[in-house]
Structures are given as structure tokens and as C-alpha cells.
Length: 311
Image (cartoon, rainbow, N blue to C red; front, top):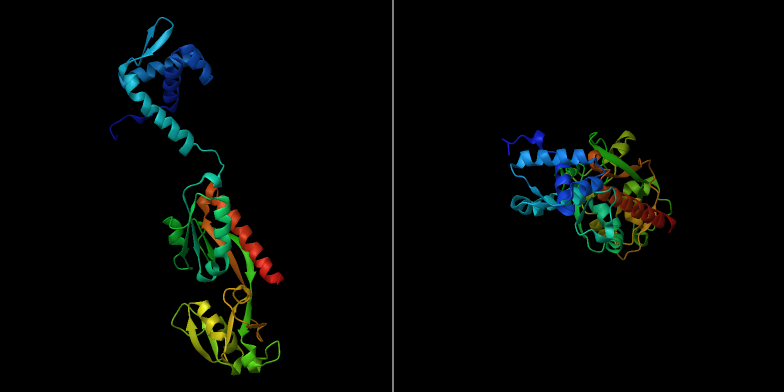
């Protein structure tokens, strides 16, 4: 292939060959291509020179294909089909006939809360598709997108490179969760009760501290963190029946993930809110499939958040 003069290859030549093969007439082929007859004849001349074969011989009023033309016609038709259906496709995505895989990157938090609703919508609107949820975080989000392991990601992603396009989904806030059948405190929880009660935290590192502890340090006070884990469902389970507190995202506290009767309270200190975003590669955001998937995920997530906050 490297030795071939690709400057001589023109898509119009394939179109001309296809029309001549179908109509067996230069004039009819020219009409179908919206070209003049001289231009069509010139393209046939170029084809003959390129392939070293007459391709079509005049037999009365009919241009009969040669053996070489009959041989290459299926391949030309295949190329035309690939061009029209796979390369020059219209900017429309039809989920009802899509048989591929939707790949969505989610944090543990996002998968537990939004995964079931996203799954239900995709099963309804794209019944032939498969769905893959993959764990992502700030450290591997970009590489997962670039390697096409995922189409998009949902989570907290500050300071991403410019190659990544971000869509705001909602603003999350923190709440204190605890079993008030055990703690027996007035609401909202006081700072004294908050500081005197053992606490559990979500942490991705070996450190038993978060930004909350930095805030407390600036106030010259500290809390007693007794457990750290990456799994918020573990904390939800441990809270029941124990004198412990956890500061967790509002959606985690309000989601009916397990059977418990925990109390939610505003924290006694100021804990900054944070944004939940959906991200994809900037160069891929106009792809019809990814555009459709992004709009669906955005709608599902925002409707879920509204429903939880209205309860």
C-alpha cells in the first residue's frame, strides 16, 4: 500500500464505477450522479488507467462489464456500504437498534445511588444494548476515557485537563448520620455532642482524616475518628445500634439503600459543598451515541436528586 499513488484514487471514481455497473450506460450513470456525460466519461477513463482494464465494453447501447469489473464489483459495493453506513453516518443515534455496550465510569457512591435508575432507563430505551459500570476516581478517570474503557464518568473531578469536557449535575452537601435511638440527642446536633461522639469517615487513603478535620483544626478543636473505610455502605450498616456518627453526602444519607432508621442532621460546623459532574473527552462529546447517553444520564441523575430532596 505504501508504494501506491493514492493521489490518483478519488471517491468519485468509485461512485462512477458503481453507477456504470448498475445502469450499464454512461448517460444514465451521469444522470444518477448529477454529472455531465463528459465528466462521467472522464472518470471512466481514469478508472481504466488506474486499474489497467477496460472495465466496461460498449455492446450496442449497453456498457457490458468485463471479467475484472465483475470481480471487483462486490468489493466496491462493500466499500460504498462502509462509507455510507459506518463513516459518513448521519448525526443521529438510534438507541432502540444499538447492539453495542454503554460504558459508564462511576464512583462507588454514584453507582449505588444512580446505577439502578440508569440501568432501568437504558434497558427500556436501548433494549438490545449491554451496560458496563466501571469504578473510577480522580486518579484514573482521564486514562479510562482515553483508553475507551468508559464513555463518560460521574463523580467529583476537580482540576481536570482541558481535553476533558465537564457537565454539572448537582451540588452535594454534607449531613451527619447517626442512630438517635442510641445517641438520644436534640436536633440539630450540637458541637459538643458532635465532638464527644466517636466518628467514622469515608477515606481513600490510610489517613484517618478529611477536610473536616482541617476545618476543626483551624478552630483549635478535633474529633475522635475511630474508623475509616472506602465503602459508605459499610458505614451505613455500622451506624445502626451504635453510638457513632458519620458525616456523609446528602444523597447517601437520603437514599433507601438498606433497611435502617438513621437520623440526619445538619453538621454543627461549616463543611463546604461539592459539585457532582459528568465528564467525557472533549473530542468525543459530539459523538451521537455519547451525546445521547450523556443527556440520558444527566436527566436520570437530576430527577433522582430531586426525588430524594423532596422526600
